[in-house]
Length: 289
Image 1 (cartoon, rainbow, N blue to C red):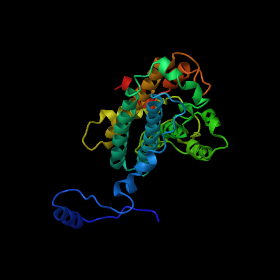
Image 2 (cartoon, rainbow, N blue to C red):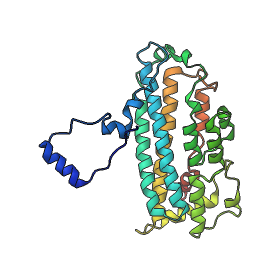
Image 3 (cartoon, one colour):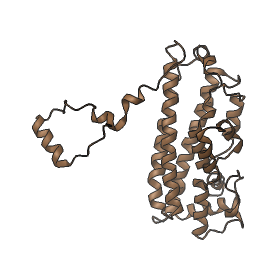
Image 4 (cartoon, rainbow, N blue to C red):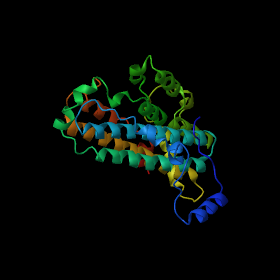
């Protein structure tokens, strides 16, 4: 029998507190309710290092924490996308603001790896084989949601269950696609055919979208929720840019310009990736504001 979390009412909680004299409940059944909800006992079985180096546990666990954050970001960005698709601009702000805060937590995780010198990393690097963060399917999901699509980066997942999910995500409208469609529905004059372009292709910044954002930002009225949306999106893009930069610096610090474990040219690959901005028209429009 699987233990589940049993809901309680405020009255039950108050009665238990009175019964315990303010002390916490210490007697449970086969499983502590906290573990039934968080599954902490399962989480703590997933750290299986490959070497005897004590620092590898830090590297492995931080990598797993980042994976959890990627999943959380996908959840928030999908919520925001759904609200934007339904013309619900105000409700879209909450998941975007949460996403920006989650990115701050994700970025902070890099700081806990600052101890790792090239010598430290080299003690277990070869044991990773061809394993690389480059192969994170959840990170690709986040990129696709943000509008950063590179179909060739799906190749490592062929033959895995992740490939089908990535294929769907690649061809589905991104959060940014939905934002552009929203601008059109709100009366902004966009380039003809812009909304009919293949969503699975990457695109250069479109001047009509940039001009639309200039008009949005010039309206400083309190009811201009599109302006608030623009700032919430900018915060997400800014924090995501921080993550990419911190990733590059971590690689530079631990392995310089050597080839990556996944076969890429490491530092140079990350530098090229950083040149592709998230929500590009939000940035180009600022020149005219």
